[in-house]
Length: 112
Length: 156
Image 1 (cartoon, each protein chain N blue to C red):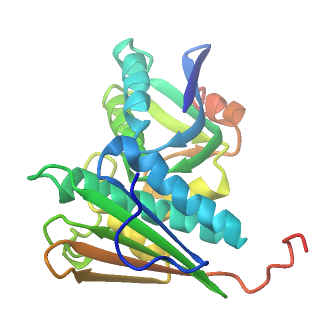
Image 2: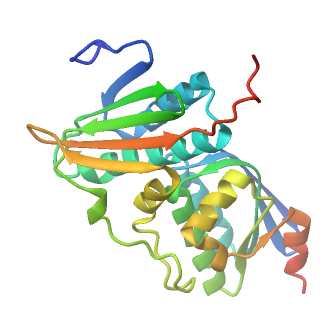
């Protein structure tokens, strides 16, 4: 898994490439936690290159979501592939996460 | 690595045995992915088995051998027309997926927890899940995934 962080005004875009599973979830938690601790709590997860997620990966997503929201921000996902979407649906995460077709839409949603 | 004991596998069976350590998870999951690819499994079936095997093995590694040194995980994959059967054997204390806590899939974000999701996925993405206690200790988990009949996308 690779993580690329870019800033788009007040929004941080975290582009993830690869699999978010039991081996890599810790690195994602660390990366997202660094943003939140730096006060950058409006975060978009660009999932265009995420080909797989497991329950361990969802734990990292949920942890980031809670931390960001508790500080007045949010963690929103964009460009989710069908296999990953299926896991999000099964987990019921789609009822608590805001998801967008592309990163631009997710970034823009924070401006409203 | 020495081959696993027991009957020599027939042509359509593959077996892998590794210590139940998290570093071995990619090899265990990769073994099943390779078998799915060789079988020409449809993408949905391949993803389902990857997820189910990942979650089941992760549970054995993280929880199964929690109170003892990591023992083995042995995976066998049997491909037959129309379906793939994955068997996961361990020597950990007996644990049935039926005992897994119910997942929380509908509380609000602030109350949400991830516990139990792994088994929830296993039960929902494959067509059949069977658990049995092994003679002499340990667990056998059998996962059956039916393949889509239309395989015309495969090159002939």
